Image 1: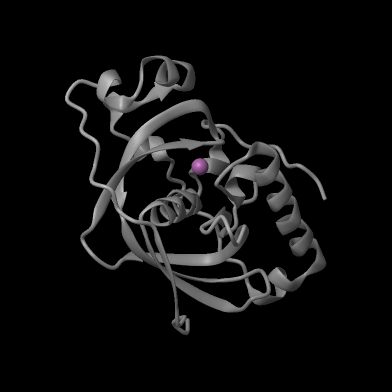
Image 2: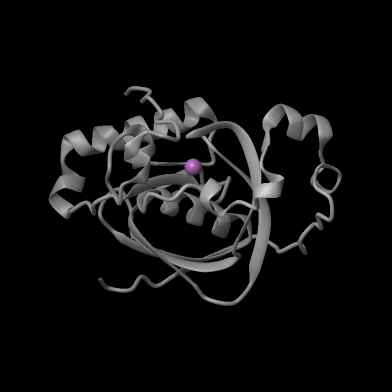
Length: 192
Ligand code: NI
């Protein structure tokens, strides 16, 4: 296994639309080794998730922690859609935008269909934090960074965030969103 280099904002690979992975490529020893490297890289940098373009591979693969008790898992060729109008605002950071944080408004209730690293289809309906993480990571597959969606008045360097926060002190008029309980429901995958 190897720890991969993480691309920083400004590198073109972070702005490309990544290509899907087919079944044969996914099953190949080289690709499985790449997945192990992604896992090791995410662990090294303590991320909640990592998308392949962040390690300079423009393929539709993310690894993320939805349920801390289950540990990291892969989503290959993921497809996301909101399943209700529920929204949330939460602080996000990104290994590819080192040293910063900001508040992003996102759907708080989404369905994701994907394949696992063995090529088996799987699907979840997610609420709260897991819904936010999966949208942040899947955005990377379309060349989108959280700073494209951030509430600009909340964007801060980590040092200043820690020093002057919490956000209601850092940003005039900032209001905490209502709490949404995290939820992870395994559902029957759609055949694609
Ligand atoms: Ni990110």
